[in-house]
Length: 275
Ligand code: NI
Image (cartoon, rainbow, N blue to C red; front, side, top):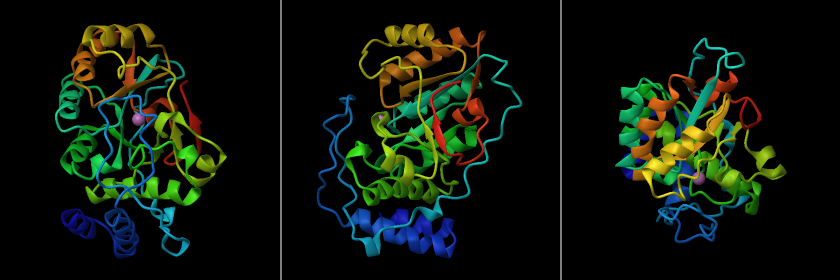
């Protein structure tokens, strides 16, 4: 945690450091939380040792530092005319399987979007830096993956801000996209998070399927023009499936990041599922 704070101090401007310090201290001083994992369909995920506690109003971090989104430049491809596909990966990073997927994306010169869980991201800044350097997009998938519709506005802010801070502490711009865990949103979530809500419209259920060949086939058969494919970079089976799936789809689709698919302005509000 100290290393995280040191990196954060060197990477960020002083006003942000103050906000960040408050956020990190909130995260560090916790014992346990009722924020649940019971709905998690992905059996690999376990509760993390660090979870944010509920803070009082005086200490509630503001979400105002959600600025300077990543400069992901549109490709010049018009996805309203060209069949485009956005590969998206949730719940990482994972120290083994995420680099395997990044290797495959790089080998095939394909860019994707990674929606990271903050408690994991904060321990793997090198993987985030590689995503950014490779031209992949980093989105926020909350700090501990709770169902946000069960939380109040303060708790939702913590979930978002801590993960923004984790990405920024790796020396990277704050994400412009937020993917709600389980896709669960309500009016409080919508009103509280001033970011693009990045949903999906293609689910090959890679978390359920333990066979890489079946995952590959599922990705290929479920793909459609304008599709946002929801995958998880925490499974070895997904890492094995992704290369052959891209090879099969590449002749038919242009692979783009989530922001490129919708030609999003940074931080554009709204929920986006697919084209
Ligand atoms: Ni998830």
